[in-house]
Image 1 (tube, one colour):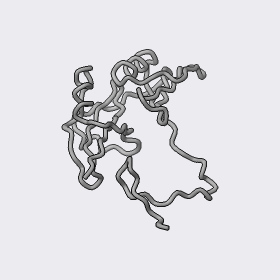
Image 2 (image 1 turned 135 degrees about the vertical axis):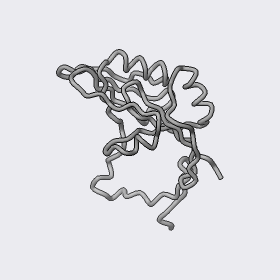
Image 3 (image 1 turned 60 degrees about the vertical axis):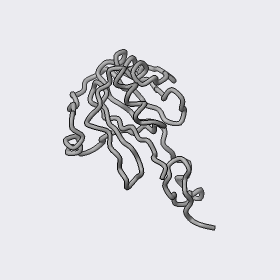
Image 4 (image 1 turned 45 degrees about the horizontal axis):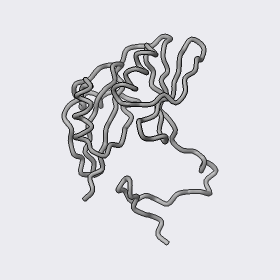
Length: 160
């Protein structure tokens, strides 16, 4: 039995799972995005990206929501709004954005990058730089930011 198997979705040869690990129940769930205005953020993510509202709730002086992509329940964005926060830097150059430490972006898989970009541009979403192919990971990639400076990557797996 091989310790590695090619994953049909990612195209990568994946190391064996570790079901015996004491942390085997840990898996990705959501990314929290801090924004100044709740209604504006929920509107942007639902209208520009077709995300669905899964759940909304208040916490202290903040408003929060879980949002999920149009056709996927496995990954969510948590909107954390209101309260006091600093403005993020807006980029028009991907290289410049890589000069900052810490969190950089979240990534969404797409089936057709060109078609997705065409639709996002039609909806008024500004793309950061030009789309590009990264051979080392066999992906076509593109980046954009939400109105509050949060970077989002789009990735299409290119089958060889």
